Image (cartoon, rainbow, N blue to C red; front, side, top):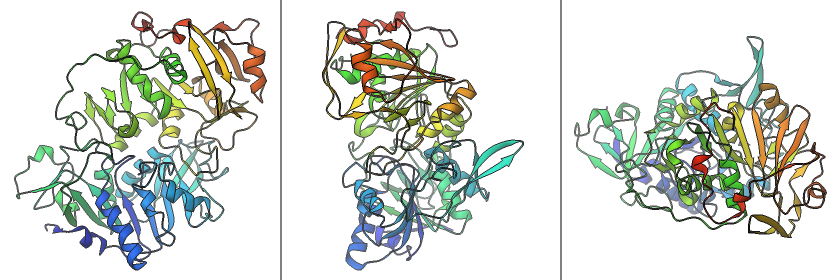
Length: 524
């Protein structure tokens, strides 16, 4: 039976008060059915319905301002919201902070895999991911405020080990995005920057009695699409509507490089300005080996891709993006989550299978707080609700980890010149503290698993040991007592003479890292 070809208003007509509505896509508009979000918010403002929804997205959807799930930050529209990161949805986050609705923050890869488990009729997603972190029910269970009380995660024992079981969730309606639908509802993704969870979500809704709505850029005649290009069969689709103004991301209308239609022409890479963020990203890149399969997190780590290009070592590494981009060059800024010149564009659940199984050699991820046990907090460090995104999945089994960030926060100013670092104004907020607010990464478990972990700042580098943090490097021009230990609540192990960070980190010229990269599996 062919799906209905209708309008976004027809899609809204399928939403009833109290429904569980899942929205596909990722981040800043990647694969997001934005027209549905616009119409849902407008309808609720006009009529007060649909209301008391459970809204779910695997990845935070928003532009850190007004787009995406921020538009659903309307009192009464939802009674519960579930996702991996609410940080780019500030208006919705404000309601969560005020206790106006229930909210859960669960790892991105867990929610992605859960879509597939729900499609298969399983009771939930069984995994090691999240043990010993804030989503462990012995900590917060992913609950983001006092109003949220139901347990969605439980500890189970199987084969002599502890695991977390993330419960299957209701799914009444899923709204997805593709590029083209034919008259039978078959979907192709030729202009999309990612595939995401589209197939798994369509199957999950269909197999659990829900409806599948798809926003597309254009329609095609029946049997005109190449079968090899169809990623979601029309038998799973209930309604299709067209948004001819559909954009790849909020920032980019259409790039054939993001969709893999073309490879980007070779261009010379202009060196990025020398600043504190570049120093940190450079030092993190020095931990990478030739041949590594890598993941670069949000923030400072995103700059590693461009620095690798500056240094002529991009081809020595295989960079990946958790949304499914394998190889090539990750996009950054407002387009982060996309990529170009990649080897393959995978579905998101498969990418997280690879991460969860330990397929990554190294990852560079941000930190907001680090404590004396080596625990990292990346998601709960001020009054604004956030979330870890894919951080927990990525950090759980990756062999080597670099956690990157400035040493202090809030007003930090430094001078980087002539191979040295000078602190002009110290940050107001300490980041190395006795106990993190909540645990995004468990240092004790990492040490037990034998992961290699380093904490990289502009002035010092620490490593995780069985007994806690140890200082291993300090920047030229930095006094260990005055500029490092005096601004930490913890006491790391300190050698009599810490090694100096490479002076090339603090100069504008290229570092010549191509000659320094060791082969994968070789000690640096």
